[in-house]
Amino acid sequence: MLFVLHLGAQTVKLNIRNVKTTKGSIQLVVFKDAESFKKDCPCIIKRFSKDSLNDGSITLSMHLPKGEYGIILLDDENDNEDMDNNIIGLPKEGYGFAGFTHRGIRRPKFDNFKFTVEEGVKTMGIRVRYL
Image (cartoon, rainbow, N blue to C red):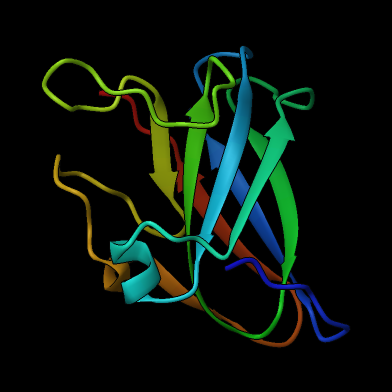
């Protein structure tokens, strides 16, 4: 379910670091709650070029209505709009979570990386991880 942004949308600014290549694009996948994350049913998927990538870092912004969200980043190096995995199921492309440093191999819970959008600009970091 994708939703239309309304006039009350707030800016979410993401400072992304550790992007290893200029190939492909960056995909931000936005989830509204734990259930949508569990079912892999995002409310927004947005793609960005890496044109402004500088020394592995890039700042991206998007607008979201007030509320609770979780954002996952995919460094989609081959632009196929999907996370590529190796033969044992581990990601072959970079990924990250807004405001959360993922250290394990298992998928985190939504509560680990959820955040609230309120008035004004919400600034968060994402460190891209490669296995």
